[in-house]
Every structure is written in C-alpha cells, then in structure tokens.
Image 1: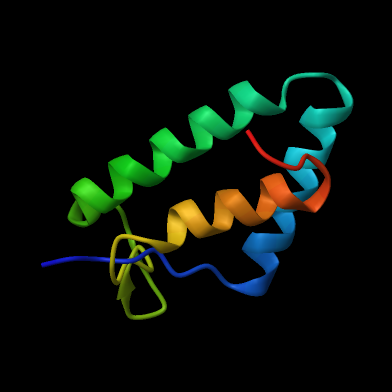
Image 2 (image 1 turned 180 degrees about the vertical axis):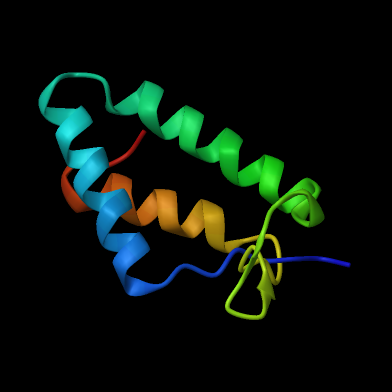
Length: 80
C-alpha cells in the first residue's frame, strides 16, 4: 500500500522554521537530508511509530514528506 505523510499546519511551520534556522548557519542541506531520511523511515514502516489521533503516525501515502521538505526548502532556500 502506498502511503503519504500528512503534516498538520503546526508541523509544517516547525519544519520551515527549523530549515530557516539551519540555513542561517549554512547547515540547511544536511538538515534536509536527515529530515528526508526520517520521513523515508516512517514511510517504509509506519507501524513502528505511535498512533497519533487515530492515525498510524499520521501516515497515509508516500509523497507528502518530500513535498513538506520541498516546501521548507522553498521558504528561504530556493533549490537544493
């Protein structure tokens, strides 16, 4: 089954703010690589993570993690 990570607006804001913090320090690329890797772990085996508000770790299909990290990149960093 194909799954997608679903992020609440607060999570998207946290990701964006963290990406901007790392960008100001010249560390954004590494942060985003680690973030993407974490999302991939969740997508590969969502049952390893806790149930949150009736969803298994908020996972539904596979493309949202990449969209969220791309959105964070686009907030102040442009392209990777």
